[in-house]
Length: 351
Image (cartoon, rainbow, N blue to C red; front, side, top):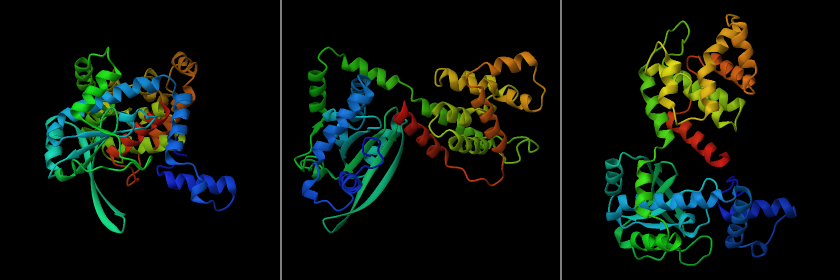
């Protein structure tokens, strides 16, 4: 349950598992410790994710270093799995920052053009109501900054896993740690490469946002603007193939070129997305208009036969069906950022 992230709290996961296995109440003292469960999760990660996990760990550590440098005046401390090495699919980068206001942190993120949300979470702990401020950064890896007042800089936080002092490192300590862990690495070059790396989901977002103001021919698209149509199509694709990121992405992006060239939107969209989508997603987008020709029997025999030879022909026809049905006035759709977050999570979980 915890490896697949159906549960995030150790205690809840332990009690659910105990009830399933023992068919009744179990003494908490008979349950495994959080540290034991963490170790088992790591064994599963090693088994299912292989050596790629270590490459991802290194990339996440470099990204953590880059972000810590951006907010260095807030005396950041890296914590959690990226520091200890206990990452798995879907792990995020956790950093504590210490400042008197959230603006002291977000101002730095704004200067870097980073996309983020601020969350104020109310928690009742030890009989006391407390509010925690989290800054969630959308990037190649999910990043969570937790804000504390400056007087908490030396406070010893307890780990929910071991019950001991939380393992964490300041910027200077983390830099020294990385030099020890990766003695042959050129950290400055890797940080520079991380700065230059493009988050594909930000590319999608930049192309999709303007489509909210691009209206369509009401005869074919009575629902209105292009973005609304794409979100409708995405929702339908998500229902049809809930674990197929490439198919869902094609549904969300198939008309993205309409904001670039209304007369040749397929070619314009593919050119803008080049390098940011897989060949399979590109194939869906390239041929989605031909589905309409197949349905009205205007496509040539050879062109139809070439499409039918593809192993993804059935999915292409399904995409066309989602495209056709995604044209309802007033249909409920998610916010664009929520849709992109869902796709990002799907990518993390299933590669």
